[in-house]
Length: 323
Image (cartoon, rainbow, N blue to C red; front, side, top):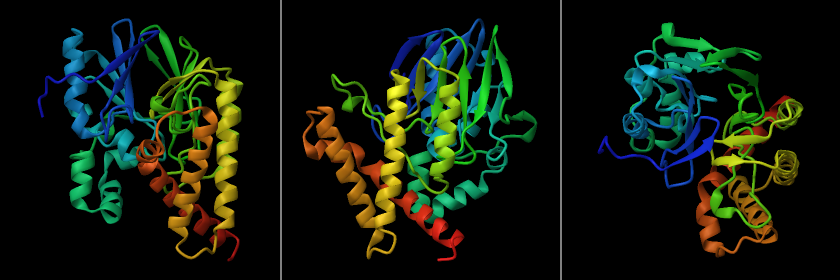
């Protein structure tokens, strides 16, 4: 990889830069560079493949690696944290800030690697995420609910945010009055924007989808009265209250659809097709003018992962109920 290649970026004001990590395709996943005074932080780390581009961006802007005080993955799913070890190895003054349930997996990523390899195979994991390096425990801060860190003259506040994953937090930035939401505020790809605004759906990636907890998390986030949300998939969205209502409806729709297919033959295929059909219908109502084939292509990875997550949730729910 050419380490001088710069990633696509958008400056969002308030010292926030959205950086396309070019995972899979442009516009699918991003991380954020925060600059407050002379202090820097990366929120999300992407994969190891994207780390050279992040470092190239620092060089291009005349910023030193020593200015980066924190690397903050919102949770330990590998599209968010797979590159954390590589990034930390390149940033001598940085500390990693992780959810207490996820920190141990970044200190020793062997279980993360084994789990992903068992599902996808070694070759896929290497191609998709690159080398997943451990991080010394001495460089890791565990950020429980309410934890705060100082960046320049500002303070970032951490909100425990289960629903998508139990090892997930959101980061509130009082200066921008915005949350860095990871996957907690759903998926919203810019290709689907219309005159009606952003199109947003839940992400139920395995294995800790918990709808009741997710609704409670949204209650807490909205209570902070944010002006904007900074999504990892993808970019900034506003009109927060309306989008939160859309996300709540999406969660409930997924629960309803999954409930009708609990004992279906070839359940996974039916789940994937049902939620894809729902999204295509919603996109039509949203005024999306992309052809259906393009819409399916843009949604395909997420629909596969969402169906997997709903299947796991159904099995866990049935197990708890004694079924």
